[in-house]
Length: 192
Image (cartoon, rainbow, N blue to C red; front, side, top):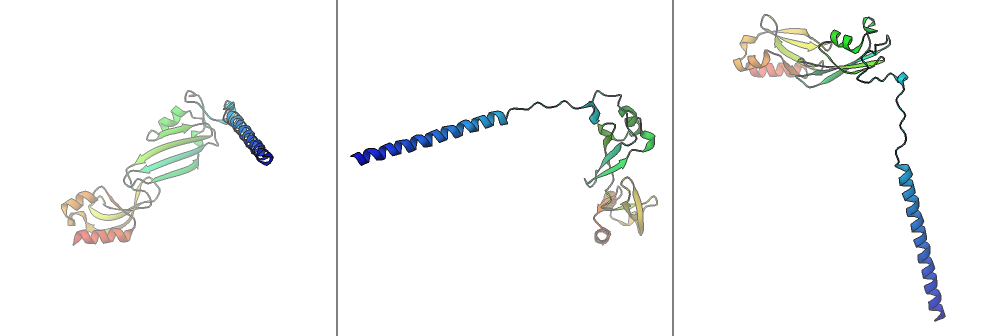
């Protein structure tokens, strides 16, 4: 009997020790959660960091300002971002003055150090070649070389009028292809 009693005392001691460790562990976790998830004080933004509020209409562009222009090409859906230094003649302008100068753009952020603006163009991006007629009605291959206009690559010597009427309507505003080989294969298929 003495042995049984001793075993039950040991088991009770072990169970109490495990219970005590569990309670201490839960208390430590609760304290960690309480202090770890408590929001810290956020520092107010410095006036020196260049970030402006929407109400600060008097801010002016610095001569070292960076200009970011994001262009979306509507026909293909591709985007291109240009990063350049602000042209010297724009230094010192306010947001409203800059918006008047870039009236076809939407200014998305403005600070003395950086301006971001967006624009959508109804052109294919530089990754595509475009089949369309020139002013005389001859089919030509064009490419967007600089991001904002199509440049003639070469004339094909095929009048637009040689194509079926429904294809003419499709080609007249410009039809984009990934490369010249694909364009020429397509043209051969509609001519036959």
